[in-house]
Image (tube, rainbow, N blue to C red; front, side):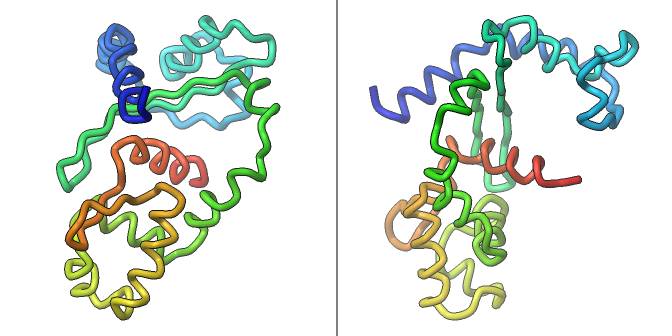
Length: 180
């Protein structure tokens, strides 16, 4: 099974879950509670943490589980429906360091701004260069090569680039995760 087919299959599985979530979203509140407050969710806040409560009910692992999910339409019109769940133990058993190159590509401000442009209003080197914020074509290509090498961007041909749909939700969750 190809990676694309795998992601399509994952996108199809949560259809019934998405319907239930949509119903809950219609009634949910948008309270901002800190992470520390989520360990023992008071009954009056359970609606706010509906995804967390659902995950805890479904998790079969004593170590717990981690879930990333999202349904996004970018300003450029890309649609991304993405879902990934893994037990905490499975994640602890992986080599955290093996992710360094991919995370490093996100650690450069120019590369993050390039990703933002590709998601919002640019798809070619010309679009990017015209803004004047990214330097020469050579500098732009240098940064794009690093993003392509780590899978955050793909070349479509004719100097056209995009953030692959399977990377949009993970990128946005990483950005959300570092916000305080």
